[in-house]
Image 1 (cartoon, rainbow, N blue to C red):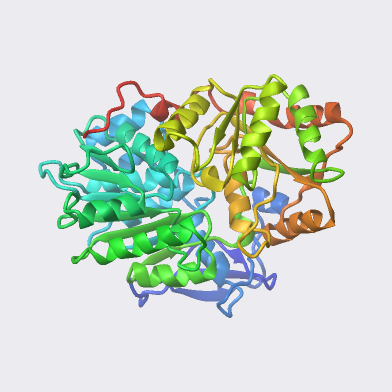
Image 2: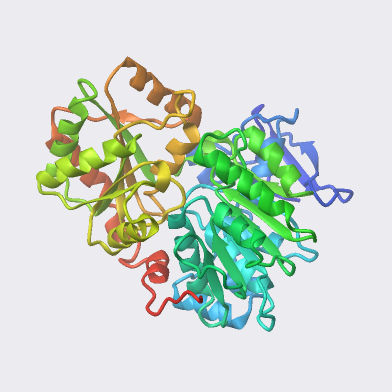
Length: 500
């Protein structure tokens, strides 16, 4: 018997696992409790454990789903990495990098991912909750280090995210002798065959390497597709459509059964259905809309007179704020460059990142390295950096332009990914969105309603008051986490080496 749960109908239920459940779903026997149980102190404060009605016509199903995969409150003790049966060399790296215990998503996902025979998984979690480490730990545990062949392949939509994932692999695998290689432009030797245990790449380059006979997937054990909602969205536009086609075509070249993991913080319904076909018989771990936003991000907005007035507000804001690092998101590349030039003239140290930078990948790598190291404090970018990038010093995200989809409607997933660049792993973060007319204000209110969060207005004409509000929020970080987090330890690890 598990602890009682309150359903969406307000009643309390007891549930036990159905012994006849199949391999792909969790099935429970549900019994109403009368009278209702006494609440714990936590439940009394939070108002109980209410469920949100889902597609299954039973008031308990969403609570069951959330409890089965995401809730650790019923555990008799906090899980440790030692309990997962990981290699000693991997445990040593986890300890060195200050991974003291699994995050909630790691505690739930890793035991499932390490089951034999391997299971496919469609996994969803909030930004900054440890999903990258979850699939990296699984991959490092599954590979056979005695074989010089590619057994793990990770696909990411951008080179920046691919490089970050590689940092995690090399950090956690540093005592294992794992061989790694990139399949992204400028970071591999053309014509030379891959013989690394793990390859991390972007879909187009990885597919090209396979077609040219440089990258063999004959002994592949695990395929991970990160940010899968973009990578598998065949209805995408422009570059995203190309990524989708490359991802699907690459998967079609694999002729034997491999473990497929699809990860993202957001999964629109059509992507969920497609993913189930892409990864046959997959287990699913998904969240409701209201569970997606990270509670550690204080979301606010500033009301500007018009579109041109936004820049003046931005300059005033950065004149008074003395925070760590921040990211400013804009809609167009030319706008990013224009704002960066004007802010540089105002005396700010600015970096710009978008897909059309001169010198291509080399320039993009330098921009993100300078920002990660603190040589620059403000990064202006388009949506190329909205997904997955983890820089723990980012205290604030500014939506200079709200994210729009191809039909000029508010893009809810991209908004979520953008603000998820702050407030990571327990830190407090701030997001400020600029609105300048009735349309942009209504779009932001749609975001508030969609995710069930409050987005509060801060005074545009009193930047000193904004400074006071932001600093009062961020001061909580001073005592919450040590100055160096485990992500910093991975990215700053000396001697990081990519095998070519």
